[in-house]
Length: 81
Image: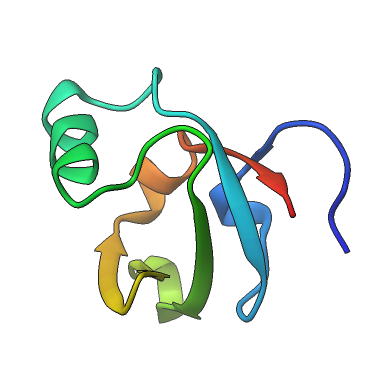
């Protein structure tokens, strides 16, 4: 289990759940889109799939599946839950 300090979303393997620590380093447009979908700091998400060869990371939140580019996922700070 991942119970250490802040990590990047890209460091979490598929099938694990994490809590969003910070959206501050994300691009304003992406941050706004995630917040419109209900994903805010403190929200728990699950990593369902990782794209091959640098493809998107698919996260799940309340039945919604959302793809995030790897370069943007590196900026998303999470904490293991």
